Image (cartoon, rainbow, N blue to C red; front, side, top):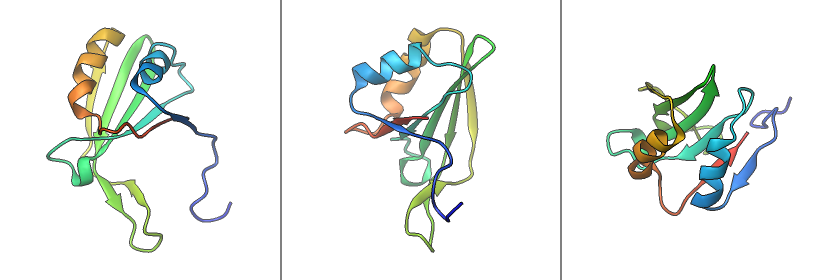
Length: 106
């Protein structure tokens, strides 16, 4: 594998309607990465969304620039949240998502 290349395919999510649809349809082997707007995380942070055993899982973490590649990558400062319903998850997410939306399904 070449440095900096993903070993999985990503699909860009272009708008919030599509993001909401993908959230409702998440499988356990899928995830969503969103550039965040979280004030106390580096560069707004990343928001990772997953679905496991009937619950939505949210991971918030710093978004840091790699000095060598000059690309953003995952940092520390992890926080985890869990939700039973997509509607509760969406209410939690709305203020944490960077606008304009930059999100990917993987």
